[in-house]
Figure 1 (spheres, helix red, strand yellow):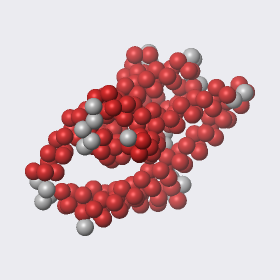
Figure 2: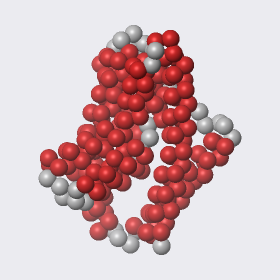
Figure 3: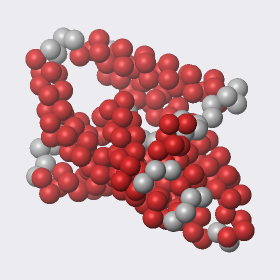
Figure 4: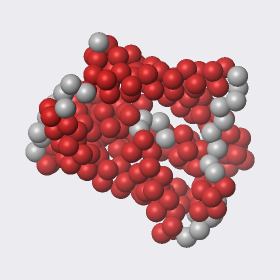
Length: 220
């Protein structure tokens, strides 16, 4: 089980939430910054847990059933998914080299971040739910868990480990803000955001490249 938990930590770290990273500095400069930040992260955490259990227990089984019933179609789907991931990796690489890949929350998200705590919690849930559905890393991680036929307690722990790993970068931003002298916090947020944005772009590129090549090799 240790190898599974280590793999989930790595997959969680690779499941970058670039919009979530961009949102943290905004929340930390509002009134009650820690409360607001943890309310948003609470929504993200709840969404990851619910979506993780749904995929691992429900959708994961449906996908596995599809694998068995339509096994002749699986290689073609894997090739298509691999090509899409390689295109994403190439696009991120090109945009990064050109210095054009900036990650900023949309105006609608920024407006929602100024609303009450319940709406902020909902924003965290909705953002991560949308990302989880579109996130290949998340789907791979949850299907891997679902294939193991774990007890509910072990399944819950596995999803919990993944969720915490996926949110660790946002928690690092909060910790860095808390530990910085008050007069340096704004500058620190700018530096941390730039570093994590760069990390997010690189991680998206590397993960897309590895998974894309892996799918093409498996399908061959």
